[in-house]
Image 1 (cartoon, rainbow, N blue to C red):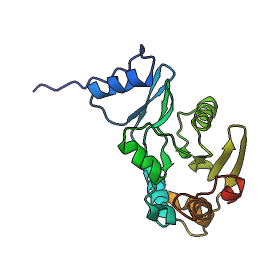
Image 2: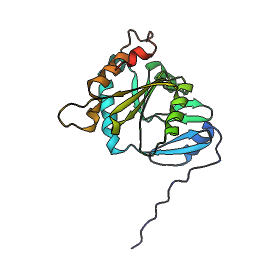
Image 3: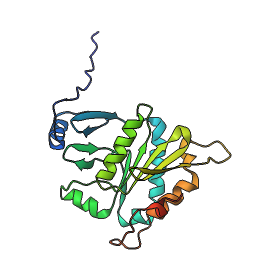
Image 4: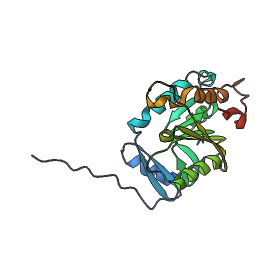
Length: 209
C-alpha cells in the first residue's frame, strides 16, 4: 500500500509589497491565515480549539449590541491593511458599516479596534510590533487577551496600556467565561452608537472596565 506525502507550504522570502503577497496567496490553496510584515510572511495557522470558545463568546456578546444591529461586524481573522508593506490578521477586529461598504468597493480597510489572543509562540517583541502596527493603521483601541493570566491588556496608544484582571465566578465554567460581566460592560460602552454617522471616538472612558 502506498501512502501520500504531505508537503508543507513553503513561505516565500522574496516578496516586497502587500500586493505581491496577495498575488502569491491567490496561487496557493492553504489552511489558516498568513500575515505579511515588511517582507516576512508569517503563518498564523488556524484557530486553536482552546481559543475558539473565546472567539465565540466575544462574537455572541457583540451580537447583543446596538452596533451589531446597525450592521457593524466583529470579524474573525479578517485582513487589516497597515501599509503597502504590512498586512496584519487580528484574531478579532471591528469594522463599521461604512467600512464594510468600502470593502464591497474593493477599498482597503484597517480596523479601529483589534483583539488579539496571546499564543504560546508569541514573544514580547511580537506583541509590541503588532500593537504598533494597528495604531499606525489608525486603530483607536487594541486588546491583548492573556487567557492563562485571566487578564486583558487594554492599549489606548502604543505606549499606554492597562491590565485588567477578569475575576471568574465561584463555580467552574468554560474558559470563555473568564471575561465575565466586566468584559461585556466594556464592549457595550464602546459599541453603543448614538446615530449611524455620529459615533464617539474610542478613548479611555470607553474602556473603563
